[in-house]
Amino acid sequence: MPELPEVETVRRGLEPVLVGKVFARVEQRRPDLRFPLPKRFGERLSGRTVEALDRRAKYLLARLDDGEVLVMHLGMTGRFRIDRANGVVQPGQIASARKKAPKHEHIVFHLGDGIAIRYSDVRRFGLMDLVRAESLDEHALFKGLGVEPLSEALTPEWLAGRLKGKATSIKAALIDQKLIAGLGNIYVSEALYRAGISPTRLAGALATKGGKPTKKTEALVAAVKAVLEDAIKAGGSSLRDYARADGKLGRFQHRFKTYGREGKPGPRRDCGGTVRRIVQGGRSTFYCPTCQR
Image (tube, rainbow, N blue to C red; front, side, top):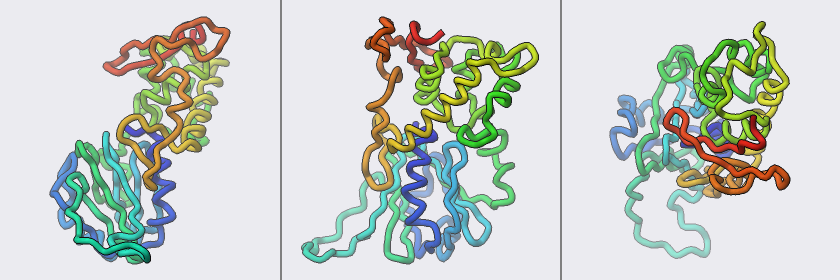
């Protein structure tokens, strides 16, 4: 499932195309994705102007001029594609019979400037909803979500205060969306490697008895922020289905230090270790037992 860097990359790709533009019409080719689409979905969007495109955790939030927010989640295989031609024959091209709509293309947003944004989703685990802006924080999807990891709110002091006394592993604590929103398997594995922390270490060990941060807590917060920022700069990680809004693939998968590298030599030439894979909470974790303690 796309994590924060992939969703943020999509947001940045869509933002200059969407913000300030009007939905001229919306094609809805099925009644549902993971859940039923809102009643009169296309009708409620038509004629509305997108005032801002934000992100919360792994959700995209298109803020509309009537006070509603179009909430979007990519699920496992969701993709947005910017279609600037939108079926218009360009100079030098030969007109052909209109092609049948792609099987897995479920929603098309036609903008007032002639551009179309096409949403496809093979497994249909994505979702879209319309929520009043003033009710967003109390909506079931957002109520209880944790801090944004790239915000100033995530500090070593804040994290230590929440980890104090926790008997779960640090890996389990970090992927808990009620603690930090948007992190997942890939970037938690990579951040723990950068911080030199074993994923099996107890979360409570990263706080003193008084709830103060340790040097490892400071290293972890810095690593989380750095790995997310590096991944966003690389356009995210394309492992299976993810692609940017311009159709290009992310590149951060080529820079993984531990994720997906089971059995390969440790990232540092001098460490002499081998990357291991373990299962925590039903999910794969990759780490170097030599470098991470």
